[in-house]
Amino acid sequence: MSIEQKALFTIFGGTGDLAKRKLYPSLYRLYKKGYLKEKFAVIGTARREWADDFYRDVVIESIQDISESKEHAIKFASHFYYQSHNVTDIQHYNTLKTLSEKLDENYQLDGNRLFYLAMSPNFFGIISQNLKDRNLITPTGFNRLIIEKPFGQDFESALELNDQIRASFEEDQIYRIDHYLGKEMVQNISAVRFGNYMIESMWNSRYIDNIQITLSESIGVEERGGYYDTSGALRDMLQNHILQIISLLAMEPPTRLEDKEIRTEKIKALKAVRLFEPNEVSNYMVRGQYGPSKDEISKDLNGYREELNVAPESQTETFVSGKILIDNFRWAGVPFYFRTGKRLAEKGTQIDIEFKNVPLNLFDNNEEPLPANILTIYIQPTEGFSLELNTKKIGLGLETETLKLEHKHSAETTANSPEAYEKLILDCLNGDSTNFTHWDEVATSWKFVDIIRKHWDSEKIDFPNYASGSMGPIESEQLLNKDGFKWHWCPNNN
Ligand code: NAP
Image (spheres, rainbow, N blue to C red):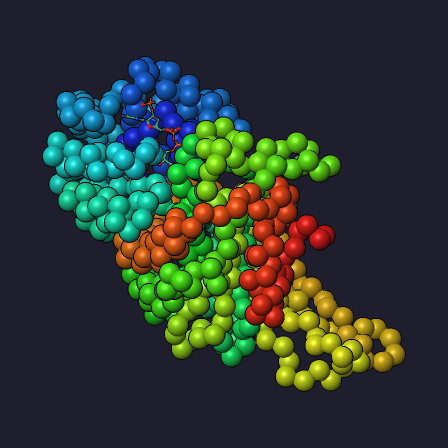
């Protein structure tokens, strides 16, 4: 059976950063693997006046590190067409329609269309409306819309945006990207849980003490200060990536590993997340902003407030950590701690699952409890697992030591594993929305985040409160300490 997919891709924002860094390389990888062959075409569109040849050169340049040969890259790029277009100009949709129909016929695409909105969400409404009103949506093939985050600024704006899009597209035609869901190891959470009876049978409050999720970045906001200052870590990371990871960790086993079944379980888990009263927010959430650093390693790095396009008195948080409780039978009483931030000690994403201590320590080191068993899922930069177990030290006596069983995929395997965007585009071509976020998930997540945002916006805080190169403000440590836990991953202590 052929794996070849037929489709016309229309990329709004075809001259932008995302298109060049992620989308063209991902399409090329699908081309190399035979998912895209002869029957596909791409229209790149943006305001800039580019000729097709210039556009194809841009595409070739964007894949230069991964292309098999110059000839192969040229052949791939010959499927690309450029259409200058201001998305607010209705007339241009007619030109776009004519070009789409021509390419549909030339490449025999059967009316399959994938519209990728790689531009500011302010334009999502107008684009989707015009795609419908100007008949760019075909009656024959599939019509799917991929949209980028952020999906709104809060529940109200997300609802408004959703209503605008839903006026033209059905929910099952909308693919909301959360690129974390395309990552190998995030998808692997389900394999670890549901493929191992030993693990799934312990996956509950009886055996798990707490779960810790860290998504840390070592860089600052770089040149994205303008955007970041209006967003902050809470909106940028918690509303989407972190709550998505939590829903995958916390959901009940689906009856089948299919999109609708998985989604139903994820939504149930998200709906069980305890909503705080505004006056409780500071008991559960910590915010931080990085300050300048003058130490040996990080040299003279700017503090957040000195970054380009950031307000000098900015109250925007570049760090957030918190404790999430899930009020259902499986998870009652188990804290899900998370932290994420910029300019932290090390770049990395990992999940540490801390199991309960044995009820009685029978070994020599009986003044101290045995270290807890920890299952770690490494998501990036390396992918893999480790499990920490207590074993007997060789020698006389019954002293124990912690043994770490670890498997990390080799750099070569990781490099050859499909890129998140590649996987997600292929899923969309296949009509599989498992790894995209449904509106109900977006809505539930915003309702949780809005309570925190509203409370934080009502109180000024003395920023900056953590140094570049640390793992965030001290309050983030205290959040766990007051429950008798500590962060398992401490890169700055290594
Ligand atoms: P970008 O580099 O600023 O690109 C924006 C694109 O929109 C450009 O191609 C621009 O081209 C086009 N554009 C702007 N106004 C237009 C108009 N009125 N009509 C037609 N085209 C217009 O932004 P980006 O980094 O690619 O990000 C795109 C979206 O993806 C954003 O929503 C962002 O939040 C999201 N995102 C990006 C990344 C990333 O890694 N870059 C990661 C996650 C999410 P012209 O100037 O030529 O019109």
